[in-house]
Image (cartoon, rainbow, N blue to C red; front, side, top):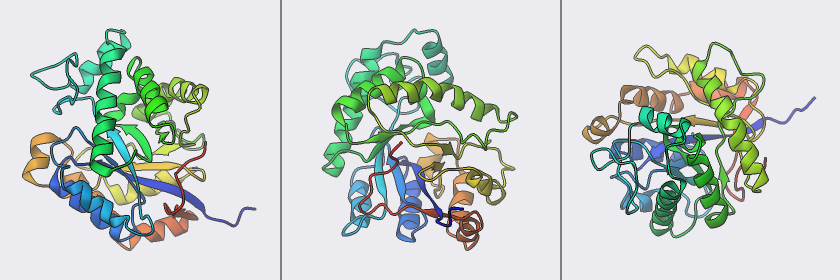
Amino acid sequence: MNLLPRRIWLCADDYGMAPGVNRAIRTLIAHGRLNATSVMTAAPHLGHEADELTKLNAGAARALIGLHVTLTAPFKPLSNHFAPLRHHAFPPLAELIRLAMTRRLKREHFAAEIAAQLAAFRAAFGRGPDFVDGHQHAHLLPVVRDAFLAVIGAQAPHAWVRQCARAPRARPLRDRKGLVLDVLSLRFRARAKRLGIRTNPAFAGAYAFTPMADFPAIFPRFLTGLPDGGLIMCHPGFVDPALKSLDSLTDLREREFAYFDSDAFPRDLARHHVELARPAGETGPAA
């Protein structure tokens, strides 16, 4: 029997989206409640707040910092000549999915954009990302995934990438979103392995973002069956005008923040024999 707790990564997505999101993520990192965050270099509210995030890692690192590749509306490309554009911005997720599934996207457009966002990360933080993932899981889509893995493998070879397949013991068939991510992750993970790119061994954190969602009741389910090195995504934040103008996920971010900053969160980790991995001296999953 393994008496050691499972060490996991709890990653807050969307740093850079809005000041309230940034502040909430930094607060949780400072309180030891997060050990990773992924940054949107295509979002409008990074700027000097990249320095504020870097300060938290002065001395011993408190959190891994990754790139949250962003390819959907309402955000705008950093590269020239990106296509398809909709009102000078990326297409909505539903349209991107449709175009990807029908192979009507050009790999070179996405490769150039991902490279531009990676370059912006290096400019903001003075180094490459610890890991790379995708906003709204767009990096898993056909055509996009090939560009994504080619660029990361060539330009950020020490980074690991997020695959979104659940642990075998945590795959309820009624979870349609989870099933879709499981399927999309099969080829993504296989291609990453062929290219020698590391991935997280399992993923959790997807749920229905509805007004009635009870996050304190939902989160412990993510811990079931999650192996050592597994990753849970989350979206804590404080609602502000900038967030309301850019994203439909608002009030639930404050519920997530309240849970992670509460006494219930460490109790749930202990009950499931789980602890947050320590970023100092570690680069993340080795799968």
